[in-house]
Amino acid sequence: MNLKRLLMLVLLGVLVGVAIFWMPGRFDDSSSGTDGNGSTSSRSGSPGADPSSGSSAGSESGRKSESDPESASEALPEAASTPSGSGESGLPGLTEKPRTKTAALISEPLPKQAVRKSALVAGYPTALEPPSRTTVAVSSVSPTKGALQVALTATCRRPCDVLRHFRTRLAQHGFKEVTATSVENTPAISLKRGDETVSVTITHTGRRNVDFSLYSVLRTKT
Image: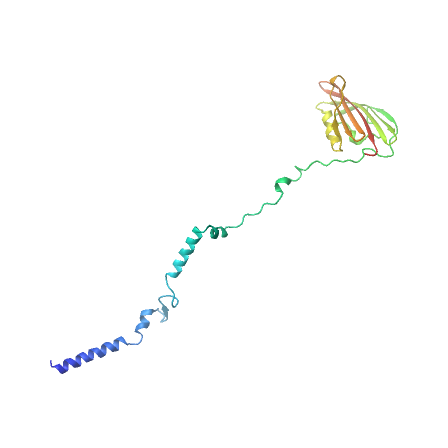
């Protein structure tokens, strides 16, 4: 092979290499792929985006929420507020003080003086009615100016708590218990509201019956 032919082959190889290097579409193939429909899709996602940026940002956010207590507390829902005064009010109807009626127990015109056996006399005040299972012996009323004297003797069949009955009944009208003087240490109570008084005494206690007496002075104005 002569020198001239060798130079031509070398020159031809250089030209072929240059042509292949500058062939159109070479760089497009390296950056994009073709799917089955002939459309091209980017290999790296959005232009200029760093594939590792998304994962690194997420991990950094997670580390921040774990290390920063303030950022972690912001994600928690706020606890429901407790209504104010709930500890003082309590349950309705259980903690409230019972209401008392301070109205007069008798009114004008007052009943006429009368005595009745085996029953309550006409004009006998409702607030002084005896407990159930009571048999009346004698009842009476005696009016004076602006006041009414009431007397009762009766027997209550057991079980019967006469004193508790009148304590509870008259407390609803504002009467308060005061020290009572009893005869021969017999059970008795004395209740007072202003100038009004009610006294109840147990006169005899048997196996089946409790005998008691009541005396009261009530007024038309409290």
